[in-house]
Amino acid sequence: EADIYQTPRYLVIGTGKKITLECSQTMGHDKMYWYQQDPGMELHLIHYSYGVNSTEKGDLSSESTVSRIRTEHFPLTLESARPSHTSQYLCASSERGQGPQIYNEQFFGPGTRLTVL
Amino acid sequence: RKEVEQDPGPFNVPEGATVAFNCTYSNSASQSFFWYRQDCRKEPKLLMSVYSSGNEDGRFTAQLNRASQYISLLIRDSKLSDSATYLCVVKIGGYNKLIFGAGTRLAVHP
Image (tube, rainbow over all chains, first blue to last red; front, side, top):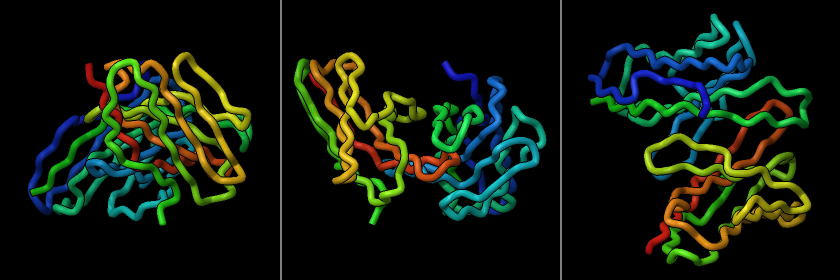
């Protein structure tokens, strides 16, 4: 089993609230990712990080922000939640690749189901 | 057009059946290919990588056709525990970024 954790697992919150979704991994992985997935739809990459102090926006535009101050921790923050942010948010991590052709498996956390009323 | 297209299903099959899923991808620069499995309301987990020569892992066989930009997954002797959504995934570029298909849902019944 992968050692990657997300809290909270479920969150129901009102519009305008600031929220932070936590993600931690104990595998020492350099790379971490945040995906957004709506029911029955594909995962979309919204943020990723190659290491401490490295963050990049993903393929899907998101109003959320991330930080990477410690290797094991990659929190996602929404400053002002809106109903359109209702979705499942999945965090993942992988080892640093040995080269551009090498793929290292991404391990996923259990996800946070966010509902904004 | 989506970068990775899959038939959403559901595929409803009896135990012991053989079932095949197909997937097409649009970016010819795709370098690596995978099948992930996602159980209902759970996180995706890597099922198997897909190699150019085709590869097998127990009851699962994956094939890749780069010329047609087509990937397949064959499951033999289906088990009830195979019921899940199967995600076709491609890696584009050198930075471990993955593009996910929306998945094909499989339901195996007794």
